[in-house]
Length: 316
Image (tube, rainbow, N blue to C red):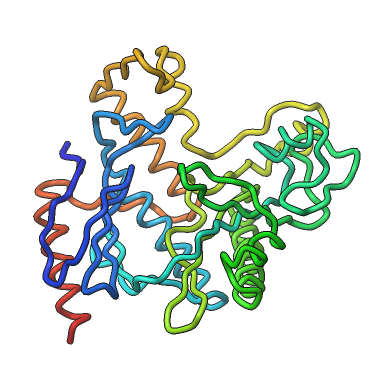
């Protein structure tokens, strides 16, 4: 089965292209972005050598589903989905801050808490909490990109004092972050899931703050299964997560963690097919929709044609 590992389009009005770990991003006339979700898969900061059938379609369509489902409460960059693997939207000036919102004490926040820290990104945490416990109210713990590319925790006060974001814009980002998380949590609950924590990115266009990039996909969000959550929490057992963790686990089982001298294990067609099925399950569980696989022949040709038609329509 054909997979899409990389695109090299030369689109009308194209001014830049960026190949990320998973997406190829084309800038058009400096005011539009075309984001192609490829079938590439990465783990431990390494892009694995083979593509996963339908992964690009799954990730793109989950993001489109949530952008569409939240557009009534928060304006976003999305204009069109001309192909199952593509989103086209406005190019914005992105803020150098990621808004991370947490409904539960888990992951890096729990590690900080367990080490005795009770202030995270300027937010004071209650005493006596346990791992995976729900916060009385969701907390926002922003990060900023450091020069060397690592995400650094930062407080609201520091962001404003350093001039990274104006106070007015930051207040708007905070309000949007809470609204999005509340909507995402409601939608997850309807599917028997808990939206544990997630991150949002915002930019500015025509003087307005808008949501950019993707939201609520397994790449940016952590979900627990609601069934059995309380019981596992009380027993101190790990929670069941809906995520791409199974790929990382397979690599660890085959002695690969992205370290020097380690070799990526052979990705057999059977393994790639199994991962593909897991991604399709993720899509169906998170959205509640039946996955409709797009034809996988001549992927690049199909995407280019759909993109060209879309750009022509937007130019009219």
